[in-house]
Image 1 (cartoon, rainbow, N blue to C red):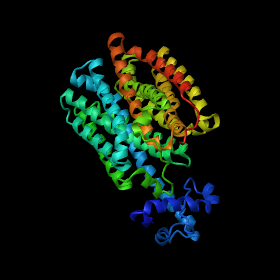
Image 2: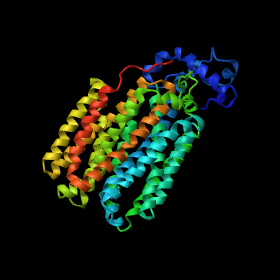
Image 3: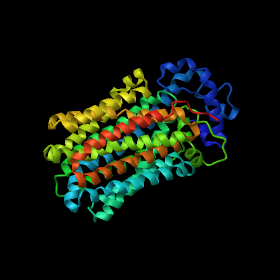
Image 4: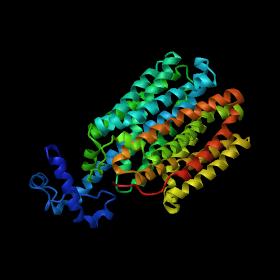
Length: 463
C-alpha cells in the first residue's frame, strides 16, 4: 500500500510531518515490531495528507507497520545482493592469479598492475561519489555503479590483450566504490538495529567472496578460463535489474520515507559537502584504517593461494583455502555479533586483532598445509566483524547529513588498500619470494591496531 501523498508537490513535507507525529501514538508498539518505527499521524497531519492516507487510521496501525517492515526487508535484500557482488569480485582474483600469470606470461610485479589499476578506480569512485550523491541521488548512483561493473566484466571475458584486461579493473573499481558507498551509507542511516543490519550487509559480502573462489578455481583449470567473467557478468546484470526494480532511481530520503523513517537531518553550512567531509579529521583516520584493513583482507585472499602452492607445496586445489578465508569472513560477521555487543564494538576490535596476529604468526612459522588452511579460515572469521564495526562507528561519530558522502570517501579510499598492499606484496615477492607475505601481513595488522586507537570515540555533532 503506497503513500499517495508522495506524488503531490507538497507530498514529501506532508508525509514527513505525519511520520514524525503519529510515532508518539504507536510508540508502545516499537519494541514488538523489529525496527519499523514511524507511522503517519492522521489526527495532526495536514488536510491533504489526511485525505490521501485514510487507510492508515488508528485501527490499522499493525498493518501499516507490517507493510513498512516488508518494504525494508526488500530494500535490504537488494543491498545484500549488491554487496554479494562486491564480495564475488574480490574473491575472484586469488584463484585466477596464477593462471593470469601463465596465460599472459608476466611476473609478480606486472600481474600486480591489476591491483594498481583497480586502486585508480576505487579512488576515482570515492571522489565521484560525493557529487554524484548530491546531483543524481542514491538510486541512480547505485545503478550506475552496477552498470560500470557489467562493462568491466564484458571487457574481461574475451581474454583481450593484457593492457585492456588491466584497464578494465579501473572501470570495475569505480563501479564497486559507488555501490559500496551507497549501500553502507543507506544502512548506516537506519535508526533501528543498524549494527545487526550492517553485520548482515557485510556477511553478504563474505558470502560472495566465499562462492567466487569455488567457481573461479574450476575455471582456472580450463582452457577458456576467462569465461569465468561471463558468470560475473550475469551476477552483475541481475544486480542492476534488482537495484532498478527496488529503488526505482529514487533518492535516499524518498526510500527511507517508504519504510516509515524520517529523512536524515540537514546541515546548515554554506560549504559544499565535499569540503565539509575533507575538513573532518575523523574521516581521514577512519579512511586510513579501512585502507589498511581492506589491504590485509584482499592481500590474504589474493596471494594466499600463491603462497600455499609455492611455499607449502599445495596443488591446483589450493584455491579452496581462499574460499575458506572468505567463508570465515562471512561467518565471523554473523556469529560474532553477540561478542561485539557483549564486549563493546570499540574494545572487541583489539581482541580480534591480537588473535589474528597470533594466528598469522602460526601460518608464517609452522609448515603445515592443513594447519595453515585452518588458521587462515579462523583469521578470516576474526577479521570479518572489523569492517561493519568501523561503519557502525562512523555512523555514531559523524554528522548525519554527511554520512553517505563520508562513508563513500572512507570506503572508496579504503578500497585502494585492496590495490596498494597486494601490489606491495607482488613487488616484495619478486625480490624476496612469496614467503615475504606473512611478515608483511603481521606488520599490517599491527599497524591497523595502532590506527584504531587514534580513532575518536565521541558522538557526532548535530550542528
